[in-house]
Amino acid sequence: MTRLIANAAAALAPTCDVTTGCITCGDVAIPLTVLRLDEGRGLALCADDDGSSETVEIDLVAPVAPGDRLLVHAGTAIARLTEEAPQ
Amino acid sequence: MKHVDEFRDPALGQVLAGEILGLVEPGRHYKLMEVCGGHTHSIYKYGIDDLLPANVELVHGPGCPVCVIPMGRVDDGIALAHEPDVIFTCFGDMLRVPGSDGTLLDAKAEGADIRMVYSPLDALRIAKANPDRPVVFFAIGFETTAPSTALTLKRAKAEGVKNFFCMCNHVTIVPPLRALLDSPDLRLDGFIGPGHVSTVVGVRPFEFIPTEYGKPISVAGFEPLDVLHAIHMILTQLKEGRCEVENQYARVVPYDGNPRALEVMSEVFELRPHFEWRGMGFISQSGLKLSEAYADMDAEIQYSVPGIRVADPKACQCGEVLKGVIKPWECKVFGSGCTPERPIGTCMVSSEGACAAYYNYGRFAREREVV
View 1 (cartoon, rainbow over the protein chains, first blue to last red):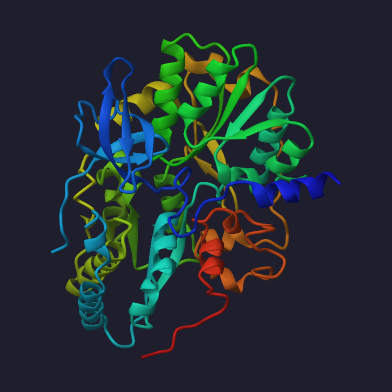
View 2: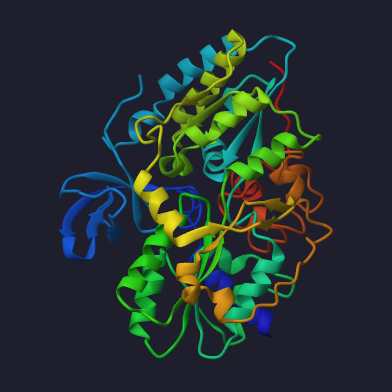
C-alpha cells in the first residue's frame, strides 16, 4: 500500500523537464537578467527570457546592476554572461 | 533573438559537421567522452551524434551527480528523513533514486516530512520558517553546485540559524576523470570538458589530461553548436598531432574559474579521504564534507546515520555506463526492467543520466551506419 501511494506521489511529483534538462542538480545553468537588487542581503531578483523570476545569490559575481545577464545554477549566479555570436 | 538561438543555427551546424567529416581519417576510430550529463542531454536532444561520421563515437562520462550517488548514501538520507521532527530537503531528482529499501518518495509516503527544493537557499528559508524543527539539506552536485551550498551555509551561520543542517554529498570532477584514465578497459581519444563546472574551477585543473595522459580536451558549452565546435576542436588537435586543453566555452568560462567561489568552497568544505561512487567504487579525495568550522551544521555529525555500504543491484549496469564501457541500450534491463518511471539504476533517474537521455529521445537500440 505504501508503495502504491509512493508511486502515485511519484506520478504527481514535479520532475525535471527533459526538454530543458535538470536545472537543479546537474551541470545545467540558466541565463537570467537582473531586475533589482537587495544589496543588504546579497540577493537579486532575476528573470528568465520568458519573464519567470526568482531570487538569486549574487555573492560570487558581485557587484551586479539591473540589466546584467547572469548564469544561474541552483539559485546562485556562478558567472556573468556576455553576448557573443558563434564565429 | 534569445541569447541561445544563434548557437542552435542548423546551417552553421551543417557547416561544422562537414568540416568534422574532413578532419577524420578513414579507418581510424575516435572515442570521445563527454564528461558532463548536460552534454549527454544536449547530444540526444539535438541529435548531434547523427551529424557525426560513424567512426566518431561519443561515450558518456560520470558527470551526472544524481547518477553517481551510491545506494548507501540514499539509505543514509532516508534514515535522516525519519529522524523525529526533521524536515528533509533535497533536489527533485533525488526523490526517485532507489536506495536498498525504497526511495525518498517512499519514505515521504510513510510519513517522513520530505520537501523538494530548487536551491539550498530554499532549504534555508524552510529552516527559518520552522525554527522549532531541524531542517536537513541533502546536498549533491559537482563544483557547479557546491558553491551554492557553501554560500547558504555561510548565510545560515551569519544569520544565527541554529536548526539548519547539511548532509554533504558534493563531489569533485578531477578524481573520477583520473580514475577513468587509469582504467584498463577504456581507451579514449579525447574529452569534451564540463562547461559549468569549469565556470567555477576554471580550465587549469584539466591540464593533467594532456600533460600526464596525452589526451586533448575542449571545455564546452551546452548548445548544439558548442558541442559540435568542441568535437571539431578535439579532432583538429588529433589531426595536427597537438594535445592541449582548449576552451570552447570562453564566453562564460574564465581560465582561472571563479576565485570567489573557490574561496567560499575552501572555507566551508574539506576533502574526504575517500568517497564512494556508484559503479566506480571508492575514489580518493573525490568527495567534500563540511569543514571543522561548520561541524555544528554537519548532519552526519549531529545525527547518527547507518553509513553502510550497499552493493549496486546485480541487474543494473550503471557502473559500466558511467565509465563509458557500454552504451545504455546494451544494459540488460534498459527499457524493460528499468525505465524513467520505474528506475533501477540512477542513470535512468535524472534527465541528465545517460540512460534517461537515450530513453527519452527514443534511442532504444542503435548503431550508426558506416558512411
